[in-house]
Length: 104
Image (cartoon, rainbow, N blue to C red; front, side, top):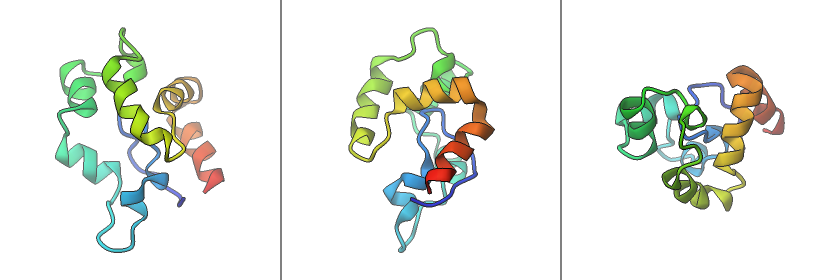
């Protein structure tokens, strides 16, 4: 894990624990570049573009099946995206990042 202080994606992934961010050859630059530029049609498209939210927890159907399904792949990497969303709501962005960065 490595410290990350950039854009938090709508799905609530902490980039500092993402294998693509951590790789040495051609690493991902984090959600600031990856999510904002790429604008995936999945979670980002639904949350930001379709519903106008910053995070999934702001949606009336949270946690939806799309987030739950996407979250399954991140569980093995130590991130429960539904829990991440709940903590984002409770802590706010700054304190949420501080919490994760203390682990890094």
